[in-house]
Length: 108
Image 1 (cartoon, helix red, strand yellow):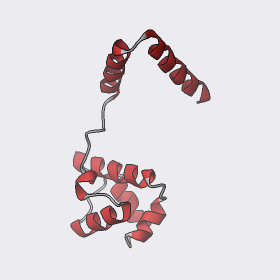
Image 2: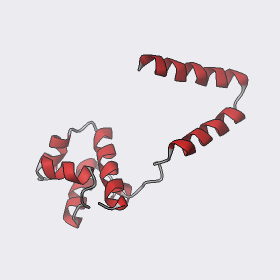
Image 3: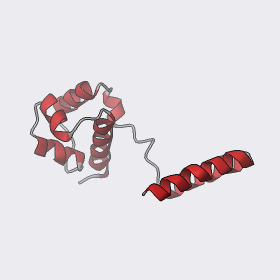
Image 4: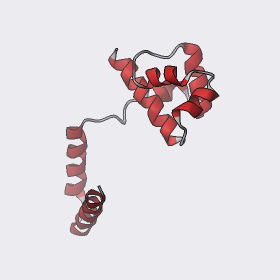
């Protein structure tokens, strides 16, 4: 299992979920067994070119979108970016962010 196949699999899953599609629904749209789509999403192997085309058509995205991993960040990168945002924000904005985050944590 390569890093690339895992990243592509996660990206397919992410795009599928953004379209509010269940795995079985996407599998049907691309004429693939749901178990095989599951293997792709888990990164067990990379999709063949013909399946890449089917997936992108069904999800209404470009092939390059399946390989766009720029949004994937480590926890530390996210914390650093949040700290930068907090440092650049006013007292009122920081209080607002705190309330939003606290409310979210209480809901969990």
